[in-house]
Length: 219
Image (tube, rainbow, N blue to C red; front, side, top):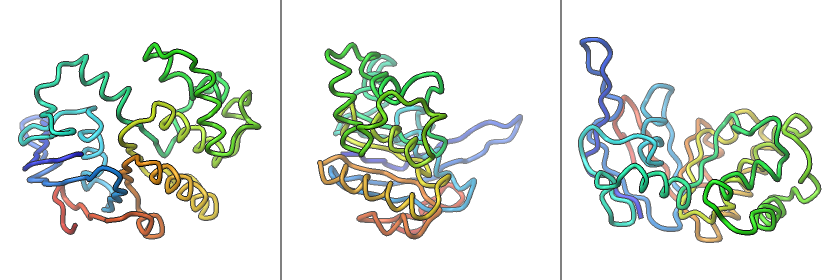
């Protein structure tokens, strides 16, 4: 479903060029769970931003479902992000004044979907939070907040979910529960790409790659 061909990402820092990614070749199959490991500053987050159509490669090609992302207009990129890609972050990124249900239904409202409340409740039910519809983030534990974030990602029924250190702020027991939810999501046919520093989390993947200094070392 995803194919990167000789992808580079170069940033300018004054007169210097910073190569955040160099010669990255990567495939992600439909329904696959791919985990990505590597030290801080290795290029993992840059890679995830490109995969999520939040940034474009400086050189190389990114094919999403066979289509070159370089040919997408900004509205097409926005539609792809909104409808086909789900995002889960280490810091949860929930709106503190909104309830769990309101946080989950927000992407549907942006997309102009009908019946967002029904679909939002179904997504929260699927992650075991049917008793937390009306709770705000400050009333939820860290594990519950991450489950709300996962529900927000899956409510759109995306093709792929990109997760950046989704268990990084959680203890090992709660982190294991979160990964079991991800496994359930994957069994529904949704592809997963998960950045992690944890070898325990990496074991949930069908395949693990390591990235260092902007290059894939092992796949």
